[in-house]
Length: 216
Image 1 (spheres, rainbow, N blue to C red):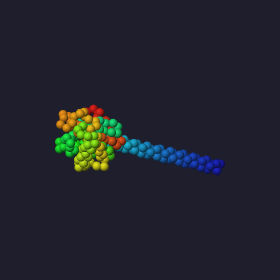
Image 2: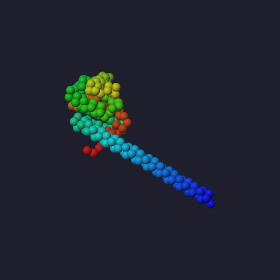
Image 3: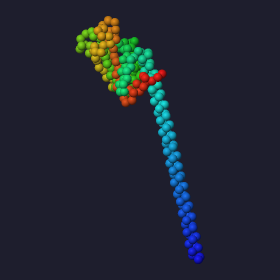
Image 4: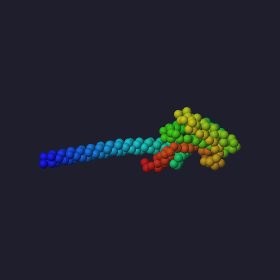
């Protein structure tokens, strides 16, 4: 009888210990689960904060771009057209007849373009297109228009732009703004001009479209 009682006590003790061990295991499991959930929540909150910071930065960048493009359009009468990966700036930068020198009155517009391009189109390839009025031969006008583009490139480089990102091309008397106007004719100066074509890095063209179409 005493042996049976001892066995019963041992069984009860083992059962009690087993129950305690089970409760301890469950507690540890719940604690580990709670810690994992806390860690996940902290990571999610940190990610949300980083995303908000990034979005605020993008909104600030877009607002700055919009202001700079507005200044080019209103202060310098620049026509800006944008697609996803290309932005064209038709600026009122003109040249005297049979001349490729950058005029003093156009320096402010070029400096503003240099500032905008350096701030918003880093990594872009910028093609400076030169044009001439229809006076003279085709070959002469091609050469003169290229010299005008080269002169503008040199001026932009002097203002801090990366010359390696600037390409030049001369189109001669192609794409006339005032067909037939040459030399001292009214409107001939509009044919003696440069245009900037910015081949943008991914996203920059889309940002320009957004800046141009955003409500003020």
